[in-house]
Image (cartoon, rainbow, N blue to C red; front, side, top):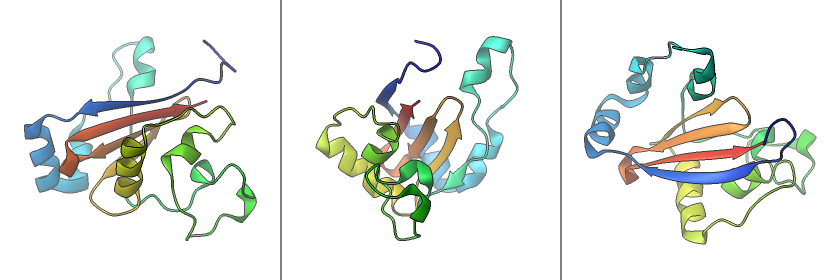
Length: 136
């Protein structure tokens, strides 16, 4: 634990039906209604701002760790395994989960934001899922 601890993980949460329906109806606007006020200095880890729509575009964070990160192109595939292995401390992911997440981040219809400490939050309303992935 702590700085330099090389923590990596993927956690899936069920998105309540009512929330998923509201996101499907409202789209990106739904995320502007989420309170971002911090109640204490301990809550800074739980603040997510700057929501974006998928697909996730080419980004050094999502590049294949074996590739040259300086030469990322718009056609570079975004893969969950690449994100969590970006520092070389990846973990095995259930292939069905990885396929579902990769599908969600490669097309429109989902939403994501980056958090502090190397985390990404991905909301997949049509599958009623939230993915919390971290690598740092």
